[in-house]
Length: 159
Image: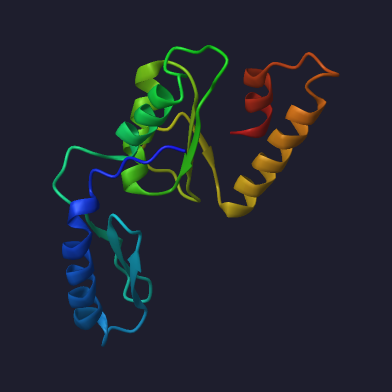
């Protein structure tokens, strides 16, 4: 088990901000404050606004978390491990960049509309994500019987 929480000291402040945001957005129909533990997201679904995120001012992001996991688990230079990172958020871009910088893995953005991203692959929605993961699991199960490369499988499954 990996336990590394550099933002732990900020949790009380994040909870204080959460209460304030809930008060501010209470009268806005469709607004929702989502507590992601180490960050808060304010979703304005019915008021035609994008997501606003408040994160602690520390040198830590999803890309650094991915690198930390690879290093801690001993996979930083392993050709046997290919990170797959699937995300739909602006904060996921850090992980997409990290995968590109280490030169192996599959950064996959989930978006129904084209957008600028560091991801090299895309899926349209959660239904495609589920289909991809099921097909990936089946490919892994059949891997011993067929000599299909992972890269070949990705070319078929991801646009």
